[in-house]
Length: 224
Image (tube, rainbow, N blue to C red):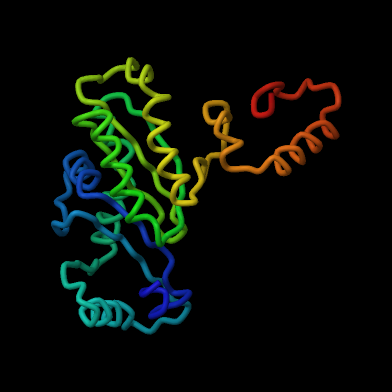
């Protein structure tokens, strides 16, 4: 909100990356971490006018609001390096083994609460669990991937329902959704009544019946 207030539509990217996620990507990419902090924001501004001073405006804005632990790309190569760190998180986390992934979203103002509460609950239930979190903070959409210590193969999925229950209960406690970018799908369909009302599900059934009266199009994939 602060950056939007200062730059309005010129703010085009606002990515959240945890320290752990950045460290993984840095090692994988061979690119040094630009700063050290528990959490990182990768933001990008764009302008339809060739003013030439947008970088200076951003630097002054950040300093004026106490954000001095920051770096600004001085060239296209440096810009690409910063984005490479963000984009390589998914590939870098594979070195941790198989994971239980979550595509979730919570209201922006509740992201901090969700992060603290959910990590605490997960550590209590699964001591030593690793969490790789990154996402699009502009809309509260988060990739929340969990890795159980000592379980590197697909055996991790024996714990999927238990891990999901902890994560999704914390998501719902923050008025979030268990499916942000990729939809409910088969794995999450038992959580559909938690994010959609009975009336909404009835409407979904009615639309399905109208379009597929013989029930031959993906039967049982979403609606029993």
